Image 1 (cartoon, rainbow, N blue to C red):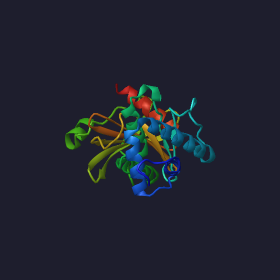
Image 2 (image 1 turned 180 degrees about the vertical axis):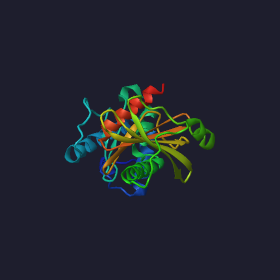
Image 3 (image 1 turned 90 degrees about the vertical axis):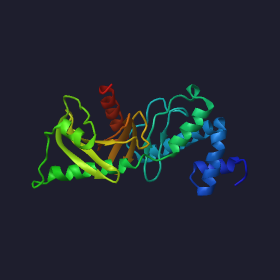
Image 4 (image 1 turned 180 degrees about the horizontal axis):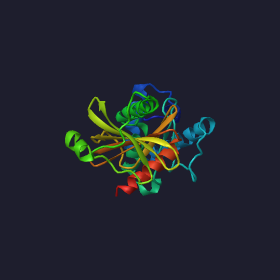
Length: 239
């Protein structure tokens, strides 16, 4: 790796062909050169959009360009809407690129597991679902404020879910359209963004975000764009 990455090395970085040392060298260079970081962000978005066209049944967002993109990786395709680059400072462009390169926070895996557990409970006659709950009791015991859901969503089960960093609250939900979702709530910022982002994991999609010291994840079976839209609508009701 040269001191200043050349075009071939940048292309190898975009294609995921560099080792850890090589990736670090490129990312360190991009951090100090926001114009190049913006170009690389655009190239990453266009490359991943083509991958989504080939592999994903979900439509691409309208008006896709270098400033508003979709990122995909072989193990964890991810949806993210970027603000126009003209609205970012030079350091902001580099910061946005580094955020895009990071994976979702660790609690997303817990949210996905809890969603699958909720589905198992719903299908087992011996496991009694608990749609009624005492939000104040849960908050006293766990310091987790149970979030409100739209009036036309039905709560079918509420359970505590253990994680490595304390308990979480999982609400199994059914929307008026018949979609089965789960809302995972945990105390802690956990590296989540303030606006929902969505990621695809196998048969499920999860949108994750935070508000203050609380982190949230909405999990469902639809594509990332649909779950992301649901999460944004849900987050707006809490304003």
